[in-house]
Length: 73
Image: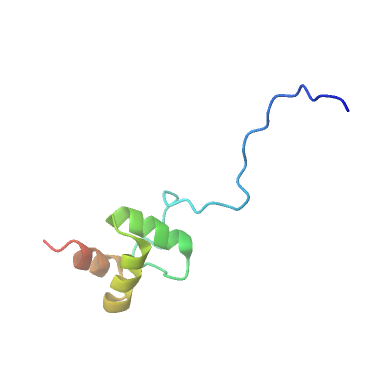
């Protein structure tokens, strides 16, 4: 057997990673069926996706309503 003297290959993930910084599909409405939307908005609001799902269940999918329910001022 011969040794390989090639540079090590960069690690590539096995599955595509959802990027929460990519931006939402709709800036005014959260689609709970799209994991990248959930990840993005959960990150924006500083909550877990579970908390975001519960807020959507109670208040609907409009970003303004969810923002108000999570950060009342």
